[in-house]
Each structure stands twice: as C-alpha cells, then as structure tokens.
Amino acid sequence: MRRIQALTCLLLACALSAMAQKTTSDTRRLRDGDLLFVVVEKENPITEVTRQGTAPAIDHVGIFHRHDGQPMVIEANTSGVVERPLQDFIHEGTYLLVGRVSKRPDLVQTLENAHRHLGKPYDFIYMPGDEAIYCSELVLLSFVDREGHPVFQPIPMSFHDEKGEVTPYWKDYYSRRALDVPEGKEGSNPGELSRRANVKIKYKFTRFAK
Image (cartoon, rainbow, N blue to C red; front, side, top):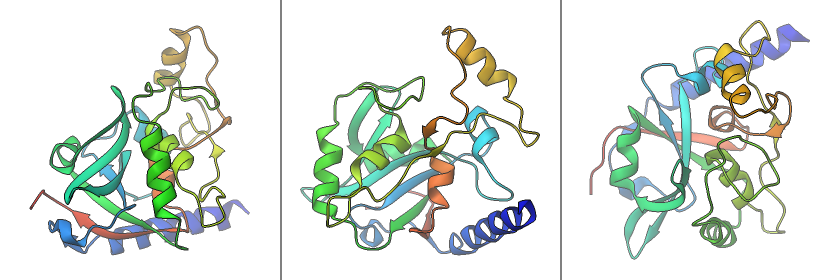
C-alpha cells in the first residue's frame, strides 16, 4: 500500500512539474476562481512538512478574480483576509502556479463566499471551527459546486518530517502558545491543495504584466 501511495505521489509531482512548464505573464489567461499558488525558492517550516517528492515548494495560495476589470487576489495572509492587486501578490514568491478547479464550481457563489470573509483575522494556530482563517482554509470555505456543496474536503494536517516525527520548529511553535501540535487534525495546506485531482495546474506565472 505504501509503495502504491508513494508511486501515486511521484506521478502527481511529475505531472505537476510538466504542466507548470507552460509559462505566461499575460493576465488575460487568468480566469475568475483560479487558484494562485506561491512557489518559494527556499524550504521553510511549512514546505518542509507539506511538500512531496520533487513537487514545487508551495507555501501560500490565493483566489484570483477581476474587480472592475482589474486583476485582484483574495487571500488570507498574516494581516487577515484581504483583497489586493495581483501585482502586489505575485511579489510574495519566486513565481506562481495557476491552478484551475475542474468540475465547474459555482464561481459566483464561491467569490461571494470569499468576499464574505474579508476582514477576518489570520489563523496563526491553523485550527478549524474558529473565526480566524489561514490561506488554504479560505479556499475550502469558499469553493462550492452548483448544489452548494463544498468542492474541497479537509485532510489530516501534517507537521511531521519524512520519518513521521513532528519537526522541532512546530513543537516549539505550539509549545510557546501552550498548545498541542494539531497533527492529524482536520485541515489543509496549499501544497497538498495544488495536487488535488480536481485542480489542474495550467501555467507558471513568472511576472506581472498588464
């Protein structure tokens, strides 16, 4: 079973890398509801426990849409749930991977849901069921299909290394907050979200262009 899971992860990572070879800087190729995955150059505590195989190191995600014709992103960053221009968002990482959600989600309702969360605080402890929201959690809360059902289901959260041990960073992170590491609790992360079967990576977006 483990070999099958490992092979599946490897195939997904290879497919992700291959699809990302299509590079663009043309915002006209972006569609409302596209997921913008931020790829970073160096590993960090998030990518160390969420990256798989040779997949890109993704540590953030936002939701693209146009407002009065202007390319914008709705995201949950450390300032809270905000909406800002794509030009500001893209400078967060080395480049973006543009993921398009398949099976035709209800984009009108999805974007209304995302806007409804604007102003909420950032979830620094990555726990479900509270008012605070982190980046991939915003995606799970926003995307619905045409029957109003969630497009994405939560997964067990991972704070462990390849040996299955919670990393020292996350032990210290939660210890300083007098909390247990929520290993295995329901949640999400942007790297795993980019590898979902219903997310197709369309482009590598390398720089902003009007």
